[in-house]
Length: 183
Length: 441
Image (cartoon, rainbow over all chains, first blue to last red):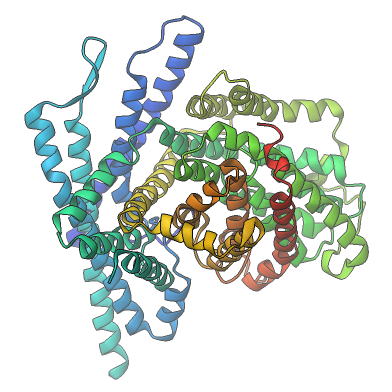
């Protein structure tokens, strides 16, 4: 979960994707900072100025979804998705070919998972945009829901592409490993 | 196949895929997708389930505690508070036999009250405390073992990321769980302390240590600390504890607000000490983002899993079955702890809580047991896995932080083993006497 994993770097074709993912991560980082300031301002406003900020809870709720999906890509890129790779590590050392094929299979499943979430989330985005959905109470505080739905879709899409890039890399490594010793 | 059989097959498949090395959120989400699809025979249903889980699960303000307490922990580590706490603890304990070991435990316990992560504790104290212990003649095994053993305090003494995760899973109050964690945390730290004293006398070949040695080097300057220094060095820590735990206990702030205020104060402390530069701050924020994404995405996937279990009706049936076995509280807890120990050898603490707890919660509730107490038992039981091979995460963190080829992973596991045994003993005590967890709430 929190253990540092190996940093995975994409090849030439993935460079643009890498920059997009880092950009999203930067945005998510700033968002966490903004949340920190907002909540402290609310504590201060409520207890010292007796002037609470309206809509803080709604904003936190929207923010959490946004932060997760802004950071998901970068967490995936640097190998921080939770996994238990001890047994897989042993297989990679003893039988690299099998290990690499397994790694490719894991990343195919990862891409597939992101695709399902993406596919299921798209209608929610369309609905939020067309229906003008918002959270909060009219006249006090309202915030539209579509930006967060959009972030969710974008986050799933880049993570899916990252997984696909990993698959290609593992298969290339498999091919190289298979050709290597036979010569 | 009946839905229950599909549910059981799904749980087994998830565990096998996790053992094979698949990303845990992917294993939870995809197998749940498959399970619901087979049970209901309609692919649109599981797709909606995934999308709803992704959009709704973390859309609640309690989840803000995850990034906020993570940031607070990273900032106090960056500020070097761990080092100060360790120096004070050494000053207090170095005259006792095994004193530097006890000091490591005490420093970890105090540091744990301002951070929520065993990983942070393990990496901070591997750096600070292992070289010091070895310089004083403690064996390598004991030095790394005591750091690993006491790192688990990070997630038992509040604030604690694992207590937050359990609170979310079991729908319990984070504040009450934090308060419930205080006595068990102190109890475990005290048990470690006495065990070290005993081991230093009865098993010197394991512990080592030359006792009170004045080497006069700069790194041992804690021997000359004055009580004024101690107060000055402990002030920021005490202040943070007052804000976070005092605020929650006194009902002044919610856990989310305590996390935000704690992070802000930690930031100010780090800036005042001049130990935080822009680069370090940026690193803390990026790390916070990675921790948040990995924990919350895991929670999202776990909610897909628990929705699948719900569709299969598994928790209720499993609960009825367990009740029909007539195990009683003792038998139930025995099975539960054995399962946690077994899974804990491979699966990380957070995933384990999210996978196992939902299966047992209905029966625990039906037996009229307290869910706050059950949370403390769950977190400590799951945390023993941090110290056991083949995949004790705390031990791995110590290994990679020290990065010393002379210290093998097997040394760390061997050194941490006595501490894992003490944890188990404390866990049994906590199960036998629920008051230990519930007295303060």
